[in-house]
Image (cartoon, rainbow, N blue to C red; front, side, top):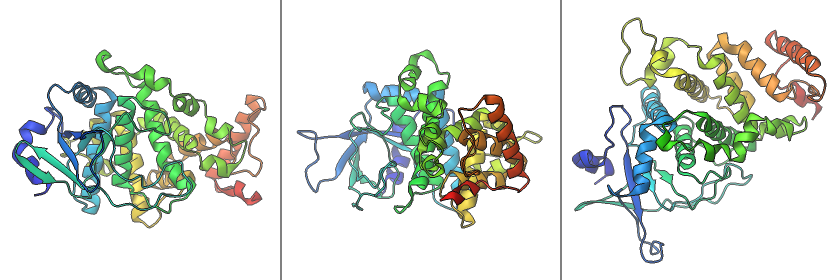
Length: 380
């Protein structure tokens, strides 16, 4: 028996009580003896108990604040992919406890890890016992995993798990991805960690101070990914912090409020909006930008042009929304100081009025086709 069948029978017990369209299942890993599963034995999972304090806190995060916003974003992403590609949807399933799976690859590694088989996972629900399908996505929340960004707090774990799940839904990773391609994925996660650190939440679940203490928060806002590259365009595009900074600046700019054609949003919605109501208004500024970004990313993949680096993603976004090209190009060139478009870039240490003037002229040159975003690579 597959998990979805079992869930249908005991849904009132497992599903979070929400009025939204983003129900989820919350499980707890059951370790035995010294905390390790016996070799060859399946990983045992059970529904999180009512008196499980960590589970209670996770439910609070998923019902309020940025955790709830991320959960809705994941729900709408699964709908979008189902309606545009026909891919089946699966239950949103969180697991508390030590991660049991193979490390397929690190978002910061140059060489992927060897392929390992997925472990067998068994769920026990009362007297029901069922084995999870091997392709069932699981979102793990564990405090014994060392993350590249050091976010060993529950809200950080939650944001990272949901961000990774969103990308795996709309743009599944390939094991032979380049460093710049991997930087897209890590940068997207870093971008959302920064947004989480700024998102206003109820006081009972306000973990913003913990997130703001992470290095990623300061580095993304200070554009350290570009500064540390010292004008090296390759190093910039291979740094997740550069990707995160560009996405962050796009999201907080007027692009977050700018609405695309209504048809862009319809696959993301549970049902069509009332007549004369723009569907973007039902999403809010954050998910408006997310929907546009993820739709452009997916469209490029469907056209056989999957983004391999930040410039590919920027161009895919501009192709999808031509009216936003000028602002997107301006943000990208200002963030990178034109290093990808000019062989020598723009000296960031020069007086700002000179920097601003050169970047404005460079933006005009790119928009009018006199230069390309990759012209600066000619020096290599």
